[in-house]
Length: 85
Image (cartoon, rainbow, N blue to C red; front, side):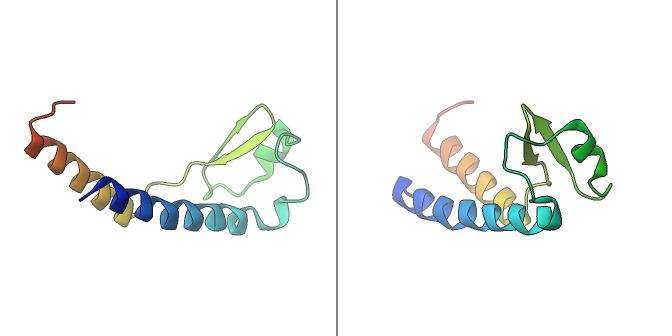
């Protein structure tokens, strides 16, 4: 996989992740990022994983299968080039 192919995949998945986060926040998106409080965080449903840092809610959902497959392919490519992590 080339660097340009990885960059193109990144554009697709980053856009999808942003849309997913906006949908998940749904009714909670009444405040701007940076304005959320600890009370807002505790009001989120238990099945949604978020982190609250300086008033910003970060979606902490587990990576999708596609993400894990891409990471694996990158690791294999790096291993085949002889690079070590």
